[in-house]
Image (cartoon, rainbow, N blue to C red):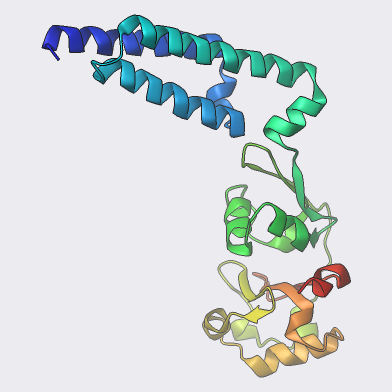
Length: 234
């Protein structure tokens, strides 16, 4: 391909993509839903083909870009006008934490594990699951969090944690999906015997009954027990 033609194609591709993106609106960038993701990939592919593939006529490339953009705009219009279509195209927000309780079935539905959930919470300046009243997984992959107004965790006296072990830099998970995190227990200078004692105090007979447990910064223990319907599925 001659250099002048290549430069012309690159310039046209850039300008057309810029104009079409502005026409489609800021939602394409600000809220990356399933449809927006597909649209961005296809437009990028079409733009690259127009710029570098000499087998594609410039007119054909421009028509393809304009047609796909029009299709995307139409879907956006239908998304605004119809709740049913919006549900199909973008899905619905999913509650991951409700009234302070982790919804294990919802986590599995959206394929989010506890490490990912904890990471999303930290991005919201929440370092302890026990501080959360509601957490909603939005359709664009972000997490909306409403913190608890008040919380009454167990005290260090109740849990028999020595004073020297009482202050921690941040909450640490010690049980995730019924599995003990021995490394974190060791870092906190706690052991399996201490953990078993705490579970017995709360009438929890086995680790399989615990979905998530973490030691808070103040030394208190937060436990989220597995619900009966979730346990039955395992």
